[in-house]
Image 1 (cartoon, rainbow, N blue to C red):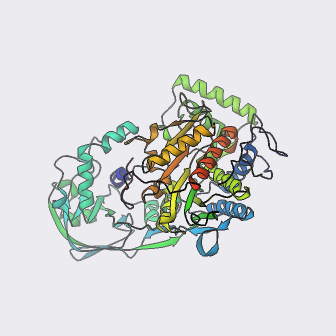
Image 2 (tube, rainbow, N blue to C red):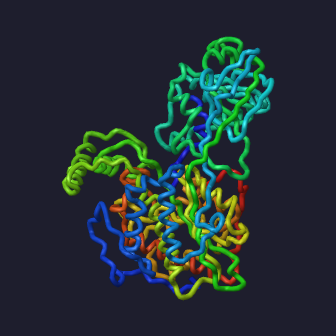
Image 3 (tube, helix red, strand yellow):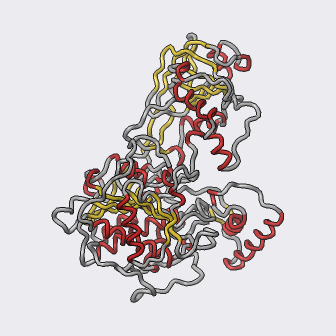
Amino acid sequence: MRKLSHTSLAAVLLLAACTGTTRTPVAAGPAAGQPTIPMNLPLKYDARPTVAAITPADLMSRLYVFADDSMGGRAAGSAFNDKGTAYIAAEVKRLGLMPAGDNGTYFQSARLFNRALDSTSTITVNGTTYRAGVDFIATVPNQPVQIGGAQVMYAGFNLDTMNIPQPAQVAGKVLVIGPLMPGFKAPQNQEQLNAILNSRGYKEFQAMIQAAAAIVMVSPSAFTPAQVTSSLRPSGWNATRVPLKGDKPTPITLTVTSAVAEALLGGPAANATKGAAGASTTFSIRHRDTPVPGRNVVAMLPGSDARLKNEYVVVGAHNDHVPPSTVVDHDSLRAFNTVVRPGGAESPMRAATAEEKVRINAIKDSLRARNGGMRPDSIHNGADDDGSGSMAVLEIAEAFALARTKPKRSMLFVWHTGEELGMFGSNYFTDHPTVPRESIVAALNVDMIGRGNEMDSPGVGGPQYLQLLGSRRLSKQYGDLVEQVIRETNSGFVPDYSFDADGHPQRFYCRSDHWAYARYGIPVTFFSTGGHRDYHMRTDEPQYIDYPKFTRVTQLIHDVAVRTANLDSRLVVDGKVGDPHGECVQ
């Protein structure tokens, strides 16, 4: 699942900083010839041949391959994403599924790229030309920017919400904004962040910024070589982008030296008055794009009904995770998160208390004794996020492919890239589907289904725990169908809909690939077993997965897909469908 990002806040704070099928049974014990799952899972595990049934041993064999250190985290924009997707494509080919990607292949390029500020970009004020990388750096907009003869206005300190100029006053102008308002305290937790985001002053400040032709921030010091490199030659995961339909021009944000600011304002910024007019200026901002790796895997199983086989049920997950980071001691990190950050990256970072340090050290010593000492670790394996979803979809695809009876509708299995960057692959696929978009009758999104025991989710986790999102937002019939399957298959799950509530601060409905389908009016259901201490941590590894529960959830998703694919009529869409190119609202 994509880590919660606050893009609207970043737009401000970053400026300042700096089967008709018969049911395939769940194997209660090991399938013939398959091993049992050991109680204490190993660090490494040799994959075994998989079978038609959905089994713990199959999922374990697959996940230990897909979330191995050799996959390097599978981050979109890196060669490791190609390595992970190559494994999936080889498996669906082995199973005999039809390629449904680009040009008769299993792959659909998501057209990912890194965008850099072109060094020939300039700002001209009163006949003096200022150069990119020397006098200014900039965020790179989604379109080249040519601004001629724009009027400059000083808008005060960043996040100064007193006497904010109205959008009509700043339309078409270049706003110069000073450092953060004196006394501003950055939010330390989700509650404080929400208070800022929901405040009237913040919303008015954002409206002002959005109305401007450009935003100019004044740098309090000279640019460092790293800042210049990041602007002119960005690289790495966070620089990756994707072209999407409906992309709207974004206001460009420049950071300038004090000399440029003084030229723009006609005097030092420290002496400027809010609302004061400055000089007329001309911007010529260009960018360069460099393609980077990132691809969806798309495979298809044709339906058996002559009338319905041209309709599709999508079962999907995201194939990417995040890149390696600094080396830490694996067991120390896990011990710390167990005590201090039980939600992993979803929990705020803070220092441990003296009492907590005692508990952390005891857990750490126990883990090191079991594992034979320190374990240096830098790889974000993403076993649960979303190795579990990806391998569940692969296991479901195998069950469909090897079943004697095929579903009436065709099944489309999609492994999306770039979810962690902002649902890039799923947005690209639904913008450019490899089957007619109107032929997709439903989607099932699988993200993080390998955990959710009592330790992972205190007070709510356990064998019955399952999060469902979106199942009734577009189609009440779909939500009823999912619950009917839960009951009739005796799956034992009790759905938790709490995270699907309108306005929920964690915004799970907007943070995974189902939204890409829902925005086009395609009924979706999101399946998850929730967060845990290893979320977006180097400790999200196959040895911590609850394989029996993982199997039960996978089987349930398979059964929902079967029921959906065999409906006589497509699901009734009776919920509100929003703007496909608008912002997701929880």
